[in-house]
Length: 404
Image (cartoon, rainbow, N blue to C red; front, top):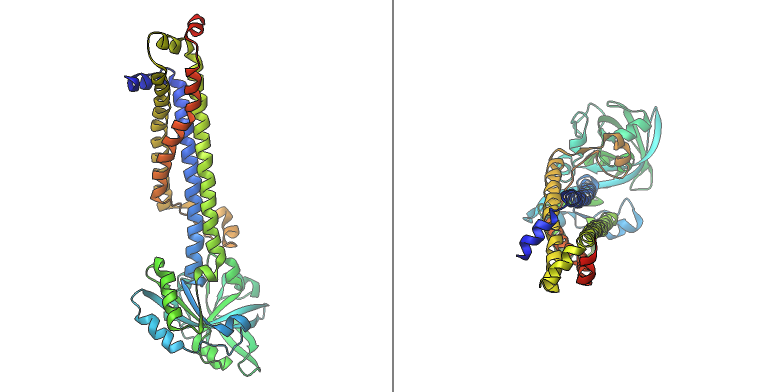
């Protein structure tokens, strides 16, 4: 009986009820849209960093991180590589020789880090090979060894494919060394700051010029990202004298961004619930004040105050049960669509690249948030209708019946 009366009451003023329902639905939709977009941005930045330059785990000699000396190569390289390659969770592993160099062409100069790599190994760890203009990933070039530079660095040096580049640095013996390379391709990643200070050559070419035989860095990617910390602990147990760090330690700003995302999501959920609460309080309070005479009559003919209280509570619950699913379904459909096709922000591509983001964003939202929102909507509707319900209980039947 109470359910029927409550449900019919919300449709006595259809315009007001639908206005509240649409407002609550739009509030939920807007909040979830912002949360999903922010989550998509955070995931994109993290994934781009891991697939471009961080990887899941990196191994260095302990002295290399302190002094960055050319001779601070990884002392147990063969044993580490053998252990990593045999592990079932390993997706890819690449060794790198990193040397700070002064790079120059006829059109300009710059300071870069020369990364000596094995191209086939690097393809398994990073996506640099996928970011090339022509797809020439350090293939043999006539007479001069090949080099990869970024589009941003090429602009700075006024260089292009087939341009000759000279790289100067200090070799392992403390003497000046110079390498002459030929640009075989140009890459462009989602991180313009990384692009500007990194160039890639073949490991054997850089070792021959620098007289440094070994590697400064071993980068590892795993099949299951959830196992990163466990794999790192295994490596530390077997090779305690090496410095082994996961992506969270290498790029702490990425982990910090995850924590900030949790805070941002919590704030938006609070905003959504506050908007829902104010909408319900306002609607139910207006309904109570408009129906003072009717409520007074119901109390006069024998309906006890407990039933009046629950009638108003159920009215607010019905409003939220209609508005909540509408907002959640609309959000789900929008997130699924844009999560597949993306949101094109090409007009801000340069600014996004400066912080490691691509111009197309793919919103995403954990399924648990839909459940959480559903529970919070019902809970908020119950809490927000308490004040209007108590207001109705304070009505004096004799006075309300005399009102016009």
